[in-house]
Length: 381
Image (cartoon, rainbow, N blue to C red):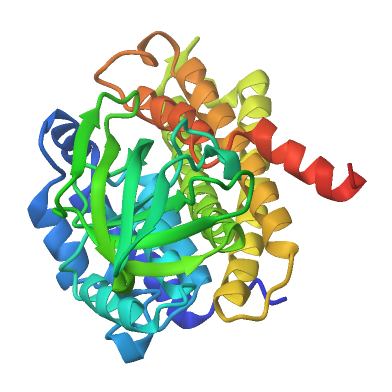
């Protein structure tokens, strides 16, 4: 497996970094946090219709760029560095993979074309309690003449109150465990859909509760059947989140290095103190471990979307999410400590990364939950 980045991949990474350094700097992030309704619509317009980032994974036949998950991971790493507030993650890492792996070709082509054009924000709703197991899918679907009727609720839906397209998971009433689960795609304005924004620890991300009350859908809205489909989508999203966490961990380290280089005590920079050097070295080691795990997992994700990966996706996603979550939280916490008395103040940025680190740690499976998955697979228990 080749880990050296191609010229095209370097161009994607560098152009994203230049754009986000201006469009999502500290001032822009704080302005987005203060908004009560939505993300900055002009920023999203530029992302979707000028930079074409939502089109990255979309096949060329559907109007997209036809690139792979490695390119998306490089982009997400820069989004994490600059705490980008936008529907990009939900659209590209949750909804787009669900559509790409779906069985309904007509529905897939319709929505992927709209996503690639930057016209649609999309997300995935699956869990009633915030869990990641198949048992967390508790919304029900019953068959009626000519279609389906959905009922149930979903907790902590990323960008659920803002999305134009909802991809929802539901199970037949008499099913349990991994049986009877299906995915449906429906416009957010469908009668019976109720959405409510939720307060969040990380104010750069929007969460919502979504409820379905006798939502009637015809067969054309059915994306596909089976827990394996949903599980793979969630693993792909976890890999994307790991790449984002890696970028944010790197930025926490960079902010710290800049500060300790400027801060002086006893007529010398505190960066020259041996104890400070050791702590920064530990941060760098964690970042590099997370990056290696995330990039490897991105390669496996690319193979899965191309239809060539096997069961390795689950283990790669778990490994990447564990390393990235732990690295990001460690670096964000150390950044606050090494900034000293100003580290926890509102005017400095470390607290923004600390909040993102804690919130992202809980998204798409905690490190402990993924570690249990790995143990189950490796030890066959």
